[in-house]
Image (cartoon, rainbow, N blue to C red; front, side, top):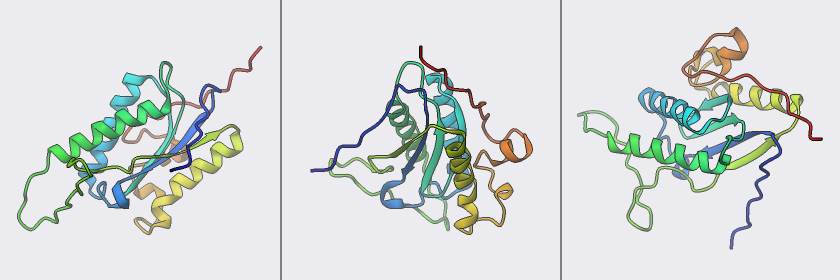
Length: 181
């Protein structure tokens, strides 16, 4: 039996979440796939009313820095996001001669698996942790040798923080936590 994950919601913290494609396969390995992911992320953010403070989309995983949605949990939002992305990217596959085909593995029930089931969630409770997580995310494409500098990877919030430019998706401001009492 798996150890149950403990999620800490309701404190007003930001959440640094990481989730991966099934068996870390590069299902987000094309520009088109990453562009589609970012578009759906923005749609889900608007619909579920959470703040997107930072992100990076890698070929086989994603990091998000988000607030808790007003009427739900980050778990529910990620479920919706992952379902919408997998449906959009699996449903639009067309055969192009000479193009590499990424076969999606079949899950036990016969459905095609796109994402790993679980996700990593870290509560970000301080300005120092916020800075650490943003720097980690933005350095990810460089560490993986996908680009020489974060400015060359448009699927992240780097341009918002480094140059105050709007990237592929709007980044929300960090709000101070309200103290109880």
